[in-house]
Amino acid sequence: MLAPALTNALTIDVEDYFQVSAFAPYIRRDEWDARECRIERNVERILQLLSERQVQATFFTLGWIAERYPHVVRQIVAGGHELASHGYGHERASDLSREAFHQDVTRAKALLEDLGGQPVLGYRAPSFSIGVGNLWALDVLAETGHRYSSSIYPIQHDHYGMPDSPRFAYRLENGLLEVPVTTVRMLNRNLPSSGGGYFRLLPYAVSRWMLRKVNREDRESAVFYFHPWEIDAEQPRIAGIDAKTRFRHYINIPRNEDKLRQLLDDFRWGRMDQIFLARAAVPVAKPA
Ligand SMILES: [Zn+2]
Image (tube, rainbow, N blue to C red; front, side):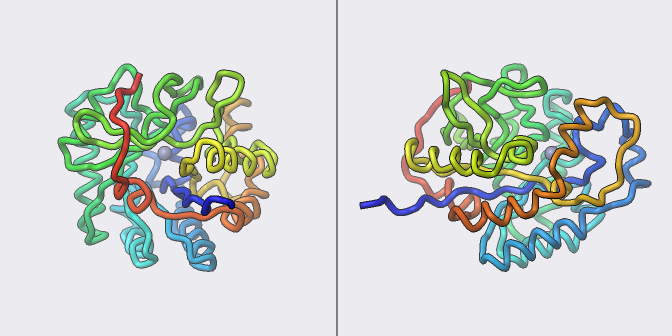
């Protein structure tokens, strides 16, 4: 007999196309307000897509966005989704002092809770920027009332990653739950299989195979993520960027919405808090 299908976590990092970390060398922070904003229409499309399929998801939202587009936050909450934090200003946690990180996550949490009218329990660091050099950030998250984080990516990557850390949800000694985005274990390595540029790059059948493998062989819920700008083929092009950044950002965007629809149909999806916070038994571990 087949085991019942696991529910996987669908997560959206709510930030606009000009805020991605890879563009930081090209777009100054003080230019953000002057850029054409695409977040409203893109989040609306996502909410429509989810409501058609009666899927509830977790939206890791930037405080910067919430402050300027409060109705986007209210629409997310009204749709029955979990509102979680992506920090205030999308600075990599690894670029901030402990004090500055404390300020950033406190400010974002307060803003989101004010607008959303519900406690914000989850946090995801911009660009998965918690790792060996700044594990203190996990203590700051616990101190500031977060219950879980999804910030340590157990892969090798040029911008982030902690390849030997646990692949599935684990409890830290400070009580915080860390829920990594999903990898597949192959050839003695963890391969990214949970969204972002990899999902756009790989044929859909490969992504589906990897998520099924996690559900069937690891018997674990997967954590998948994407960004609103990843379904926006009409976003303004950023000029003068290097070839690698251009490839990573724009590859297969026009096809991505169709792939996401297929993904929503092929698996069962839900919110991070409902899948992971209710679990009775979670192994205690240290990121390593
Ligand atoms: Zn981000």
